Image (tube, rainbow, N blue to C red; front, side):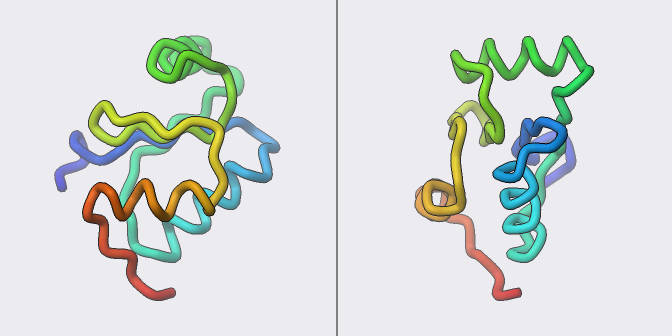
Length: 88
């Protein structure tokens, strides 16, 4: 995947679920582009437009949206996209 085609992970400062999502993706070798929406009005509007809500973390995988999730929801979402999760 090129950088432009990597999924976008929207996060908020101080969000424990966001920290967990970043850690999980990093540990399993899943690439992404990080968009911190706290203090970035344009990124926050993008998050709301794509997901229909304001909660983070939200993952935009080429138009498929997983909003307000924990790792329990993230694993099946990634598997549905044929992502092979590397062991940490």
